[in-house]
Amino acid sequence: MTHWSYFENWDSYRNFIISKKFMRYEESDRKNTGTYTNFGQNDTFLYDLHCYLMYLKFGFGRATQDIGIDIRRGSMTREQGLELVKIYDNEFPDYALKDYLNYFDLKEKKFFQIIDKHVNKKLFTKKYNKWKPNFLVY
Image (cartoon, rainbow, N blue to C red; front, side):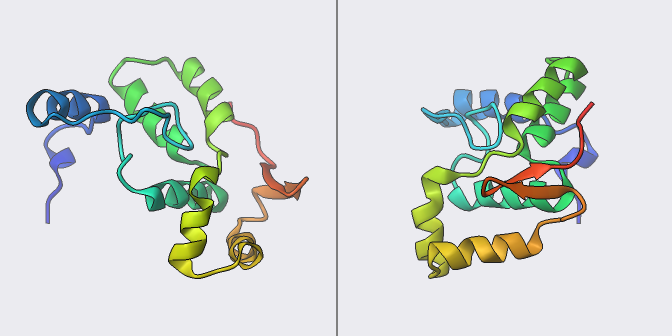
């Protein structure tokens, strides 16, 4: 098995520009949850949940992924990226909660109990019904 990134670095923005030019792909009217972009992975609401769970399990989320790509391609400094990580990485996709509950056939309380069960408690503490990091990003 091979991946395109074996041959060249993945660049979401470049891929977006090409698909917009040749395939009439359009960016979203709203910002993607958990990041500052509006053009990548915006065709599935489950990806937003995946990135939020990734954050709660590993301590990095969608913004960190996007920022890493943007820093490598030279469109952002590390310092700019750090500020964006602090703003966006811990963003829950509220807009899709009803869809998640319907898709998984769960009540809201049970849905969040399942999420809470899998949070990395070494990295996060629950305060005011929201998971807060026990670590600093610097």
